[in-house]
Image 1 (cartoon, rainbow, N blue to C red):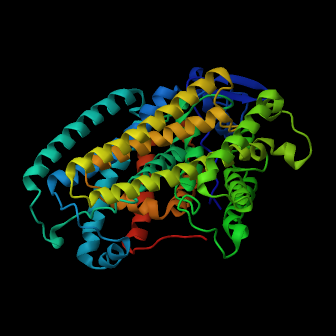
Image 2: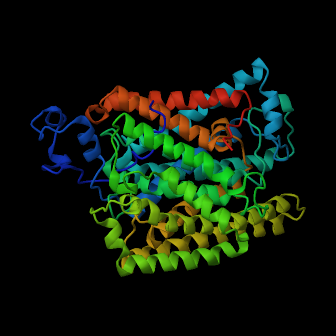
Image 3: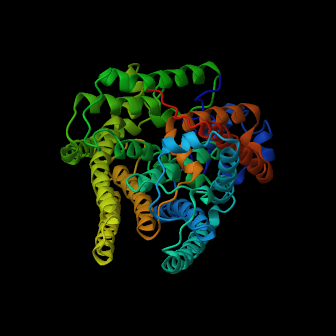
Length: 523
């Protein structure tokens, strides 16, 4: 009954949270828990209070979002560094995921796998939860300290590697397998994006989650605003187009879109059936993000172009869409007035699909380029000339950082002089902002990969292999929590207990999938 009910509960941000209904407006900063529980607050129902709790929010700054986006990759790198420093392994040994799945069948390997998964949970998942909640006001300090520790760890490892470069460790003594070069930094990016997402979709319903990190109402930059677009980016980076593969022959567009449509309609029916809290202004009366993903997939299947031309097509689409917004479409989309037709009732979701489609196409082009760079890195690993190898690797890293800087400059320029960032309309500023954020995370992982041998974390592998399965499991648990407790009234200690338990159940459930070597594919 509660499956998929919480996907669209990512709707907050900072500062002035407003409890609103047609009859009252109350600033959240002036309302205590006792006030909320009191019928004196205009007699609002719990559903109305929850909807108001995530409405009329204005976001944070781009700088703070950039800092928060950087801290999770740093946690991942620190976790990998700890394995390298405590028990270094030779760089050349690479085990395939199939071999790992087979080897995990023994009791000894399963015990080791669970131990490593528990360490990932303690040293990556829980710190990420803390940074999104109780340590949110210390994000710059946490990021700075973590970056300093990472730099020291890398220096120590590289110094030790010169001494131990000829050391050999028997395969049975290795605790973590190196990750294939061609996929490691993209897998790490997808993992960090998913980890922040699954934490945020529940944390946003608690007061301990800062309002400035939640989705903005109209204009602004909230951390959860990035999560929606990041799904599109993650899909585009590893799509068949990005890998220069031909379109799927079995079922075509119907095969690609039908699962998303089924999930979208299931969420719509369940949400309306149990009277679950909604925020209509985000996508419309009936629309949800699964329909947006289906729309992007359908458009891509119908208008299929090679990856080399996706960027040019995206610029034309985004340019035309932004021109329409600037000349009056944005007033129509952001107006609260709705007509009786389906398009008018779901205007935000339908029109913003054009922006998400352009975001997807740009991501396809970037994915093609990143995969080309990863292939160059793989070839450099086999090079015998260390000077040439090192120079080429650093040129590749600097190239990605320069590209990210260009996206940041464009995002700031468009936000300042054309139209402010708006996830609700998915305008040009939003597309550039999401690309800059995601490329920043990718660049961090690529930089670490140029300095360290890529290592596989069990939690990372589980999330990367089962993106949709992880997301659906997280939504199921989120719905259960929301229907079993009054999240907006929970004090900090209770909220952190509930969120930590939720995260443990999420990781534990997906860990069972991982110990069996399964990959949950829905199409």
